[in-house]
Length: 458
Image 1 (cartoon, helix red, strand yellow):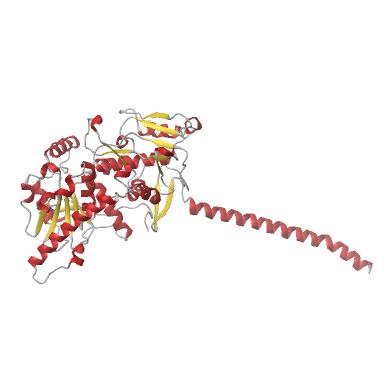
Image 2 (image 1 turned 120 degrees about the vertical axis):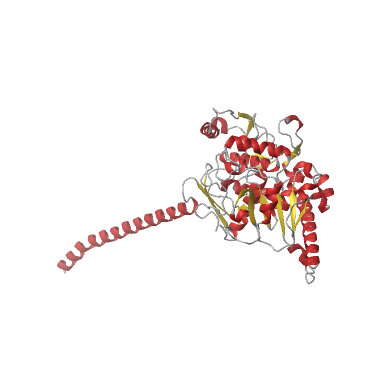
């Protein structure tokens, strides 16, 4: 019995050791499991340094960016103020987006900026200021861009500290690297402690660009015109389709489009840049860049548009032209049979436009061109380039990244570049671009294929 007892007393410590080992093993397994879960969480939320992911409308955005890798919320007690935004509609949209991305880099709420209703390039004092929310939907923007960028009102300021004024550098010596370094310094406590950073100096359109096209596209997708502008655009589009339906019913005895189907009648929109000041500008630009693919006269445009065979004729061709051309009837002549050219006055919608300032008129035309079944523009025009960007995004959402030889709606073309069979070059935005340079200032590097970084849109 003693022997057995002795054996038991000797075995007991071994059992305790075994239990101790098992406990240690279990602890290590739990630690290892925690590490694996943490790693998975990091991969899901922060795929790669310098990339951000946002899910919006079932679409994942991925883009290398100067902004934080992931930002779940935007600070609402720190603000950024920018100078009044000026120039053309799409110059102002780009300037606004650049201001938004600057605010995002600093993790600050952007105070709702002033836009410019009139079009003056040099006489800044003549610019007619108009609040952002008179052109674009304020609340909808914040909802769509929630967690990415936040717009605030001046009433949100507590004014507990004086603003910190940030003077933007200018000139050739003010490089992109210096500009980014200046912004990074504003994230340090000595500057970040201020409630408001006020940037003074030049129009944000002229600021250095630190962001890829996909970052800008996110901002543009959050922008929607106020209902009044959208309603006016719908009236113009309805008139275009009504004229198109009438022309078809006269050409085809069996084609009597009912009222409910008129809205499905297709139309073409052409952003026609042939006014004198544009032709002078583009000729100088061609000489400076040593290329000949910027300017196109009326004859070249009409001949190239005629070679597009995507839709059945007769079809209305809406001409988005400058007001100075509305008295020039020559823009309505020389079109191929079956292509029915209309501008604002001939269409009978000039009364809709003339009651508004330049910026709103341009916004209406933008929507009319954006919603066209086929759009043809100039690749050196910001107006045309942003329309193609939005149309390309719509195609990507439905899985289309190539329009080469594709005869379908939402097609876009650049009439200033000769494409297949002498027609205009098929055009899609390159979403892999590291900056907005080609859209802001134009390019002759136009492709019928949209390059998309990794899986930006699924």
